[in-house]
Image (cartoon, rainbow over all chains, first blue to last red; front, side, top):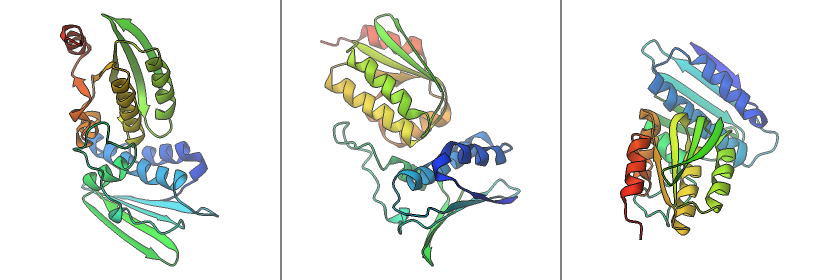
Length: 128
Length: 116
C-alpha cells in the first residue's frame, strides 16, 4: 500500500487521524512508533518551521512484512533533523530543557533516515 | 483526553485518559500546573489510561516535575503501558521522575518516605 496524503498544517489533528486510520492493521508497537514520528515531524512543521504558502505532504507506504516508509516533503526553510543536536538525557532535571526530545526519539525509533533538499523542498525519508 | 483528580492517602492523584499528544497534552499541562499551584504535599500522575505519549506529553511531565521540585512537592507517575514507559525511559525521565507500576506501590512509597 502506498498513499500520498496532503497535510493541512492548521488542521493537524485531522491529518494525524487520517494517517492513523490507514495503519490500523499494523502491530501496535510499530503503530505507536510511526504515529510518534509522524506527529513529531508534522508538529515541528506546523509550529516551528519558517515558511509562507505552506505545502506539506506525506507519502506513506507499508510493505507486506510491515516495513513502513514515510516520506515527508515540505517547502519550509531548509531543515535537516539529522543535524539537530541530541539533548543530553543524562542531565539533571534542572538542566533538562523542554525541547529536542521528539527529534531524538524519532532518530531512535527509525531504522533508516535520509534527508535531501531539492528544488526548494525538504525531503525526509524515514523507514521503520 | 479527559482529566480527573482526587485525593487519596495524602496524595493528589491526577489522572489523564486518552492521548497526551500535541493536540491534548497542552490542556492537561494547564490543569496540572493549576493543581500544583495549590502546593499539595504529594502529586501522583495516573497514566494507566494514557494510550499515547509523544514529545508534547513528555514536555508536560517535565514541566510538572520541575514545578514540583521547586515547590518541594513529591512527584511521581504510575501505570504506564509498555510503549509509554519506553518513551519515558528513553528520554531519561526515569532518572528524575519516580515511576511505579501501580497506584498501590506509588502510594506506599509516598506514605512511607521521610520527606523532612
